[in-house]
Amino acid sequence: MMGKRAERDIFVADIPFETTEAELQQLFELCGRVRMVRILTDDQGKSKGLAFVRMDNDKETREAVNMLDGTHLGERYLRVSIARTKDERAASTAATAEQQEQKKKGKPGKGRK
Image (tube, rainbow, N blue to C red; front, side, top):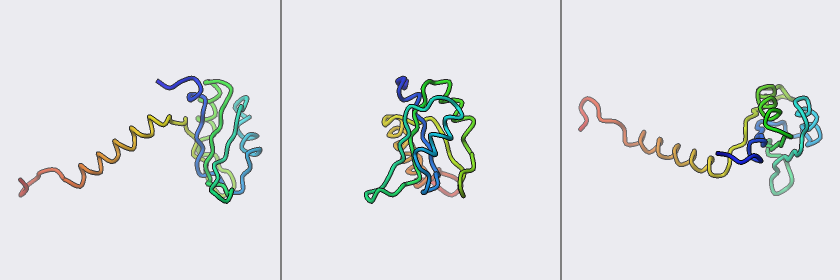
């Protein structure tokens, strides 16, 4: 089970590169109190089009995800979801790798042993 802090964290993808943290905060404030906005940047400080937003409580977090996922911003449509913990991301990556390995092996069918 995720801790309280993680349940309030939101992952935002497909953000227009020119979007500022202040603009994202203003958008998410439509759903409640925003505690933090952090746009991820590369080594040169340029936006990666990804961000984390932390809302004040779980209800506001769910409302933001439900209301803002798919919102048109600039030339893009935002993908808004509950942020996953490092453990959840690692488990998901491992499961995906295992599925890909199974596809490579293939299932026995007609003419296969």
